[in-house]
Image 1 (spheres, each protein chain N blue to C red):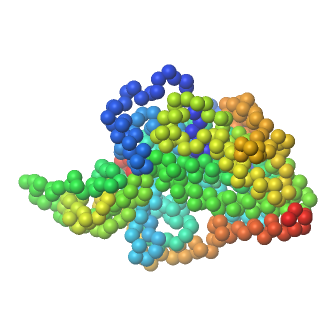
Image 2: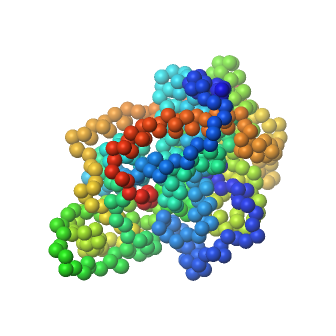
Image 3: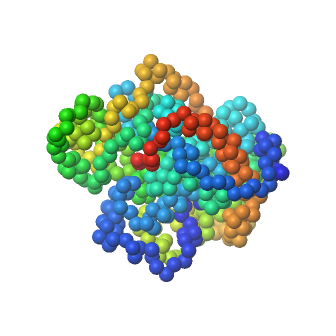
Length: 332
Length: 208
Ligand SMILES: [Fe+2]
Ligand SMILES: [Fe+2]
Ligand SMILES: [Fe+2]
């Protein structure tokens, strides 16, 4: 989900999935990670590491490309020329992030063709929040600020992970996200401190987006052998709950200071534990929507598919003029 | 018909459901090119990432958009991934060159020497950086020549050897493609200064 490994994706297994690995190579691999060195594409890596990273980076890429749709919707209707330009720049960034991430995943051996196919046929997932609509400009602002804020919490954590190509992509991505965060904050502040109608629009958008935001980082991780291995291999860098707590720490005060209210009567910071308490998110809804039954699932994939089909003739025309391409994947 | 809040999508009149798409054929997304970027005059070219493209020219256009739409850029090199020769990776404290020795001459007539651009990776997870050019009869020989010329540098975790005739560079006269980048302030975080407005709001509402 936008770059966080959900250990729930892994089928419960009695084994660790490591019994086919060469013990000597595995030990060297683990020692390298323990020393703080990154893994590069041609290094030995356990099949489980490769599989998890492909799944995670691919999901992250899909989230960028599908995530650009609810905001892209508002480019033509953004209020004023300057905001149109900025909204367009942000959407362009997100699509660029998808390209960087697809390439990082390709270094692990899954082709961009196969990833795009799996996105459109529903086999691969993307962050569930993008299955909700943006009925108003304020909803788009809520995404620009708060969904990106959540994504940044994840991405900053993952940037400290062990896989070189993913780290390089994330470094570039995080630099651009700082623009998204400022742009989104600016847009929300503008609405929240504006006329009574603007304020009400912003509050209503926040009310709509708060429940999806609370599910953004996924349910609490189950303690399992897999989680422990993925943390040791620096694939999973922070628990879902820790990410959620960090997000609340950073953004609840910023939401409240501009006069907005958060639609959860149970949200409060427990001064003794230092942890946020909140109404348990509706995980049943999350499961239902991930599996296709959300307000925008169909539209998101239909639009993606239409883009693929409408662009096919351009790709065919470009293919026709070339010599046979050599089989390659990006180097790093 | 699919209904959407977005008038542009509504106009597409997309069907509610569609049959499963046929899997994409190999190379539907073209081949890859690796892109190197120069931050300012005289600085070494540094690896920024790959692009997918049907030709080097198109790769250059994509690369310009993907890797240089923010911040200063004075040059860009684009090379097909398949043209790059790379060594194995060694540990962060080691040098690849320790395992490189002179090429044993063969009976064949020696090939015409050509130029190769040499890139070093100093630390895993970082980016390859150009250290210079060598002249050599083959990519393998170029690696040995690189050892003679740049082998003192340490650590060298990985080396890329690029045949110079495969590299698409920019004519210096065309550098003005980057001239307008600084005007696009709306792309940058520092263009958004919102704190004043928040403080004013707090004063007006008496929350400060
Ligand atoms: Fe992004
Ligand atoms: Fe985003
Ligand atoms: Fe973003």
